[in-house]
Image (cartoon, rainbow, N blue to C red):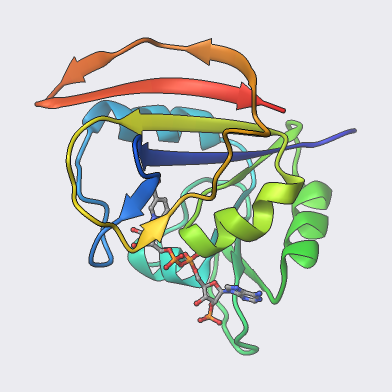
Length: 166
Ligand SMILES: NC(=O)c1ccc[n+]([C@@H]2O[C@H](COP(=O)([O-])OP(=O)(O)OC[C@H]3O[C@@H](n4cnc5c(N)ncnc54)[C@H](OP(=O)(O)O)[C@@H]3O)[C@@H](O)[C@H]2O)c1
């Protein structure tokens, strides 16, 4: 079975910000539901810092793959690998439904982008100042709009869900 590689992220839409002072500076309930609905039942790939941030709780019932330079990490529900090639190889072997998700953070989106077929982006409007973690520049390569929710308003936030392909 061919497996599509997707990245899913909530991104401050003007500067591609992902996190400020080590955390995501918005709390959009609908985005959290959207994220869960997309990754449910799929293999996910994340960086070790994102793994720490989710407090080591698996995001899905499929394997959660963590990329780290460390050699001795072990935890139930997670597979630890030392590079993106191993992450994708394991993910393709384990994936049952044809799509694996790269779920962050900034370092892992960047190293994964050359392998990424599809982007699920929540584009967040607003002013968050400078954010140290950013999503890589994707505009030139992902020009096919698969879907666009249009601007939504909820909980004091403005955002849209867009899905893009190369
Ligand atoms: N807005 C969003 O949608 C979203 C989504 C996810 C995360 N985030 C945010 O992103 C931030 C974390 O992102 P981040 O960029 O700081 O960290 P990250 O991408 O989650 O993880 C970085 C870690 O990955 C490992 N790594 C990186 N390059 C590697 C390589 N070439 N080979 C092997 N391992 C490698 C290293 O782990 P070791 O140090 O263990 O070696 C490194 O410390 C958090 O603040 C989180 O809130 C935002």
